[in-house]
Length: 393
Ligand code: HEC
Ligand code: HEC
Image (cartoon, rainbow, N blue to C red; front, side, top):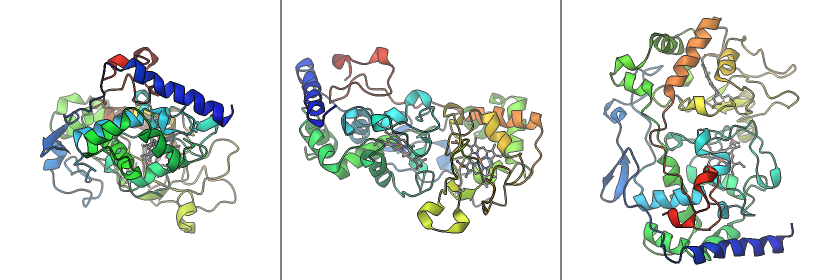
């Protein structure tokens, strides 16, 4: 379709809600999301882990270790504005994709695919990670190439194979929209729309996606009867010096935020992904990736940077396949010394899976918008709830 025709269709679509919602004004929430307490108009996480001493100095991380610092201190209005933009396909070059296309709430804020699908059906080079607890991470992307959520976002927004937008079009489309200037006024005090404000609001929303109320957390905070015998045994395998999972997937974040070369395979026929080496140039980081969190891991199959493993069982079994067993011939990777030959039994693998499933918790799932300010259909929200601009706010 020609660009001019697309623009025309877009502007018609953009006019529709102005007619439809003449009655309704968009108002941003003035209460903090679930799990956050207000303090002088800003939202701060409330968590039992806040009471525990600092983290990860103690090796594998005891049950009562603290959390890494969260990006917090945003206003309820900023978080809510970010929520609307996250689901609004107005943010993409052709009005078809939103962040939520590849980070779908119903799929653990991932997309259920090996490789994500971007604008015009193009495939991304890696699998979309879950966004649960992303506000705790110091480095982002599988290869850790971004050091803040704001910096990360410039990737998908302007990538010609993901959202395919430009800075100019992004700003213009929000500024010319009937509702966004007023929403930015509610969130930032005046109707000015800048890239920084867009990034701040979306960051505020992402950092509100906190998952710390799983059955594991209840157990860690003293409610011991919530885990059954298999799950407790699975936790012990996970934390053991044989399996060593917790050395890298360290509780309570279930990542130590380090880079590790573990030698996970690519899908059949795909060349090795150089990982962190592609960013740092350091040959010892060839095939190295950021240790991902295992929070809500049950929801975000398939697994690894390439989505190579369909199930948690396969992902767990990888670790006992023998050190370097999946490294392509001719490649020399500096495998991490904690990836070795634990010789886990079938039963131990089952127990590990049972344990990883205790990390599931979506109790702070944000409200999914039934409509977004552009009047386009919000993406990643079940269809039965969309297309009804009057009930969205
Ligand atoms: C076309 C699919 C697609 C869209 C649209 C998309 N993402 Fe992603 N996202 C991905 C993929 C794939 C990765 C991993 C890329 C990599 O690591 O190289 C990723 C990575 C991320 C990460 C890093 C998470 C981590 O653990 O390191 C964040 C945060 C993120 N996306 C947020 C967003 C936001 C915010 C938007 C909207 C502005 C967005 N994404 C739009 C596919 C997408
Ligand atoms: C040396 C550090 C290290 C150890 C030890 C380790 N992992 Fe990992 N784990 C990683 C890294 C790095 C990745 C991402 C690798 C990739 O995508 O290629 C990963 C990925 C995973 C994934 C997929 C996550 C996702 O979002 O797709 C699962 C599941 C997992 N590990 C479970 C385990 C289990 C179970 C153990 C113990 C048997 C374990 N890990 C031991 C570093 C480690």
